[in-house]
Picture 1 (cartoon, helix red, strand yellow):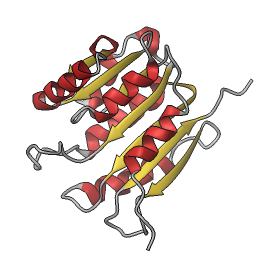
Picture 2: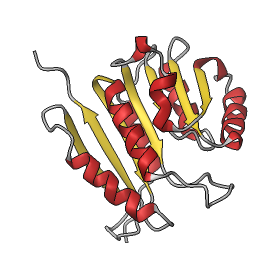
Picture 3: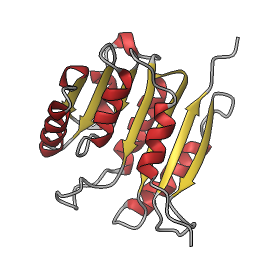
Picture 4: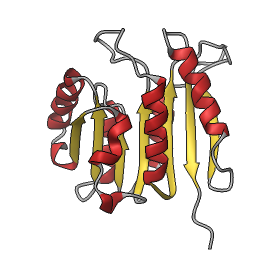
Length: 195
C-alpha cells in the first residue's frame, strides 16, 4: 500500500520553487497560519505577503505563529473575505504576485460550520488569477467529503477547465488513490507572456 502524500507539503514544494526573496505572495485563506509562515519565509525580508480570513481567531492564531518566527513585518493580515482581495492588495502589486495559496474548508480547531463558500471562492480565484505575474503559481487545496466540500471541488475543477489554455496550465494532485472524498490539490500555473 502506498503512503498518502501530504498535499500541504506538495503545495509548499511547488510554490517554493516559484518564490524568491523580494516577491509578493497571497495567502487567500489564512487559517492557522501554516501557509502564511511558509510564504513569509519564502519571500524574505524584502518580500510581502497578504493574508485573508473572515475569522478573527484565524488572524490571531496566524499572527502568534508569525511572531514566533519574527515574520510579522512581512505580512499584512486582512479580516475580510478572500473575494475582496483586490480591495486590499495595492495597485502596484497587480500582475506582480508570484504565488497565491488557498486551503479550503473550515478552520481546524474551530467551528466546522464556518466553511469556505463556493461563490466567494470563485470570486477570489478570479481576483487572484488577475493578480498573478507571468510565470506564477496558484495552489488550491480542496476537501470533498465535508459538507459543501464536494460541490466546491466540482466547481473548482469546472473553473480550471474554463481558463485560457494559452495562458494557464492546470493539474490535480490526489493525496492517495482517487476516491471521490479524497483531498485534492489544484495547481494553476500562469505561463510567461508571449512576445
